[in-house]
Length: 192
Image 1: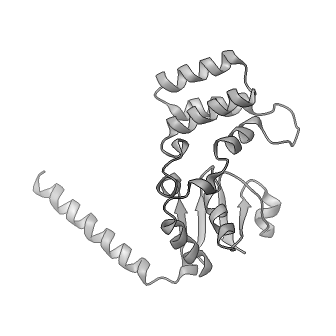
Image 2: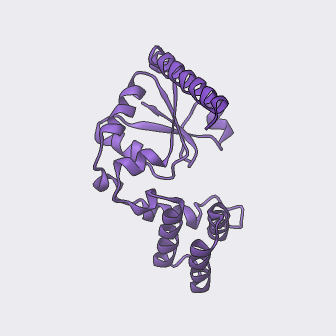
């Protein structure tokens, strides 16, 4: 590492420390906490679908096979893709499209059914609740949470603590603008 890189690195570290210190001075209602699967994986390490994209896709394929929502040939093809393809986002996209209804029907897609199967009984797998307790504590003081997680571990934990939560579905414009609630894989969560 040359002196320019060292100086840049030190400057970035100093800037990061300054930013973190400024967060400590913020009021909880001034913060938006963005969380991902790392939180769920830390809280429930026994759920393979939370460990990686690959394991999540494999779990959905397994659920699709158990629920018989895909043809056996499609199951075999997706299993091959998940082990061979490098771009797992494309594999996940193709899997979701294959399991989603092609009509104007409002019923949930087979993909959502499979996710429910994969993440069934999450509450039994909570091993490290401290992270969720910390998030819940911030939320009680006004911090908004944004998550892209497919699981509802935070909501389950809130129910266990008698702190029901609401998810705001960002795809439903009438609810977003009205401040109502819904469910989605990309949602804001607030304590009731």
